[in-house]
Image 1 (cartoon, one colour):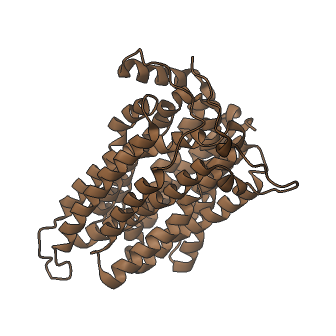
Image 2 (spheres, one colour; image 1 turned 45 degrees about the horizontal axis):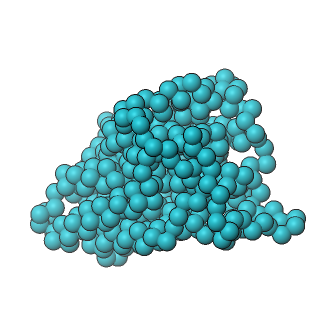
Image 3 (cartoon, helix red, strand yellow; image 1 turned 30 degrees about the horizontal axis):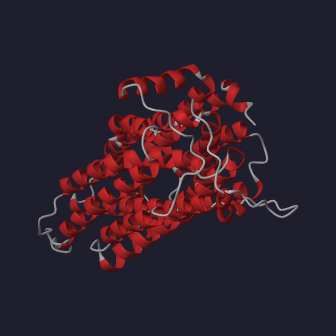
Length: 432
């Protein structure tokens, strides 16, 4: 039977000063969490530089084809449908830290290869001359998506292994700060580089970020991971065990169902921003990077509030409100034709999206036992694999209709579904 490991003295928490409200003390109290936290910033930063750059690159290579642009970006998450569950099984059997480090090395190599392909192509020529074709971006995003499918669930499963359970909620809130923060920094840097130097250097920067992650993770340990019993069942049986747990635990199942809207609606909206930026707002890559960064700005505000003061209302209710609020702001964004109002509305989306993601993740991680954590988190993130299909559908609607009409339809349907969940998911509403 698995049991908790007693952490060494240097990994034990130093409690905050009397009357202190902020949770930021956890970063200095747990050095292994600090390594994970720092690495998370580089992970998410590389991700957003990649997403923004590939989107604009394909847009240029295809003369503004909305369908191919959205699909190329979204395809990155598709492999998680196949690889994700197996990554979860591995995460419950092997060293999670080494598994993530191996995947980051693989991502760095693929980014460098694609960077040289871009460097060998004259993107300023009319027509473009050189070896790079639009379908190369599809291959690169698919290859990158394989490693992404491993990193995402395993990295999430590592957070509870670096802090005790009583500090897990605060740790997840702090860990989640990387997403909105790097949503500003990554797209902003990527957009400015595209506008000033072209596409030549962004993929080298992405590769460098992956190398830094490996270096940061080297001294890290997982002191709060439960000791693993000898593996006596096959990987298929292990996967079935994880699925059976999710089906049996109704609260976990509801929390997983709730995550479908963000990954099928919130995320594709960001993926197709280059299309909205050019066709509706008449702006370029630098403005598109700022719009993507606005989502992060809203998330940072939510992150500071949650990390400093907590949710202030029951986490289950806060999570549901975050879901509904995000749908409302996408619906409002779909009607915007002014650059600055679009920026403000995307910031609102980022605010509520962050509340949802941190709340949902915290609730799941608090409930699930560590022996099943990798498998449950991989199942939780399976809907990420449907994001490319959603992005393709939205891109196709934009291609045959318009960005405003496509966003309006998708947002309205999502808002109705979110409101139904708010009413009927009583188990989640009651979670403290």
